Length: 152
Image 1: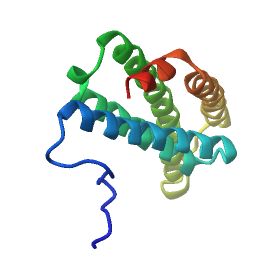
Image 2: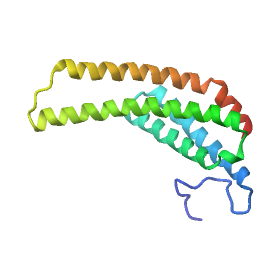
Image 3: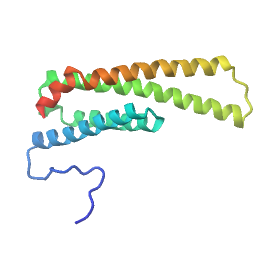
Image 4: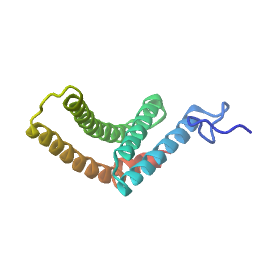
């Protein structure tokens, strides 16, 4: 038997109802997200944050495909929570890229950049990371996740 591809999800077959498949797929995506969040809290590295961002995208985009399979109220509350986490984690990533680009310009192009600018970016990133950690904790212990998991 061939090994599963990373996009294949156990329990899905072509004969089942769309809503049943949606529950399996979203359950899998949510479990992967929760695992990524747990890893991030254990080791808050850039790589683990990136894994959280990927898991958030997979949940959100899968949700967009299956919106008609679920109660709108519970669905949208959960979707907004995912969207919020994706926005905050994206802002952190934007600052990481900005710092990398500034570093490249400073070292390769020999452009002088004020330490105040770099300190400001680093402080903004730290503030956003604190907010992200708070929002992740709120998410994993919150009602939208609990209510949405009941639909699965």
